[in-house]
Length: 345
Image (cartoon, rainbow, N blue to C red; front, side):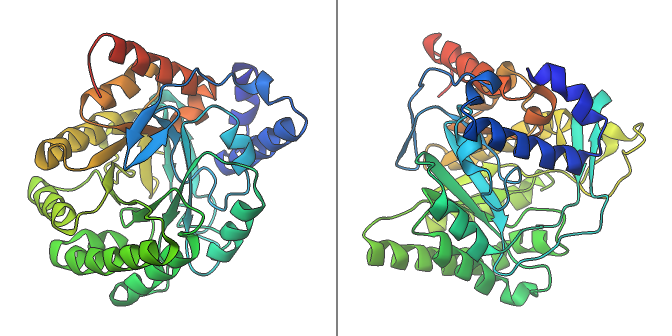
């Protein structure tokens, strides 16, 4: 079905198409027509971060920033859904246009800038949702919060979403909030993570339920930077890491009319780099923490490659733009075949 409507969506600007797609999914879900959109795959139980996932293929953050469409997205067959990035206060994000498709490269460039309705709106939406699957909530800082006070924004969001999330992702790797990636610098990251870990343990003790906390990292880090991040993660006993966010390296799409647009590049051109970062991070941390592999999954074999490189779970986003919901089952089934053949996680 998606193959029929994709040309219509691609005739619209990317952000309008994104909004209409989510609206249409909501209508289909409320009308009980969601089975015409996607057939959920058979279960492929996967354990990570102490959580049982019905399958290892999830939706990456960014598709549903405010959890407005959680029920519809949850009905498509994902093993888990990650919403956000959410910030303490609402913010409009960067000026439009700020999202661009590059069809020849099966890629997307976005400079959305954490546009969202604020953490209180996200919390209300999750509370009103009927989704009962594994839910990740991705947290960030407001654009006008200086880095020296950034941890306060993350603490506020962590406390607000903790009761509702299955796990929380700390996003310090978006290229679209000025200075955000500076938080990945070793000394800054060490203090930042230690503060959040203390809050995580305190919230776990107060609630009686410990929720895993993950760090999402950039694909544009050097080997020494990745060494330092791995050391911080292990020392602070962070539960896991997501490899990776979007890239600021647009060299692979330099020939495209939109190739020089400012923003993070995702989709097929990101696959090799994000997988290399994933493989290197697995080598650094061994089996001491779980990794989610994300970046450039456009077919089932890509998902299986991420698992083979050391991912416990995978996430898709741009692949949904180009392939639609059928990609979910394709990825699950390819990972299933990989497992049955005795390869991967």
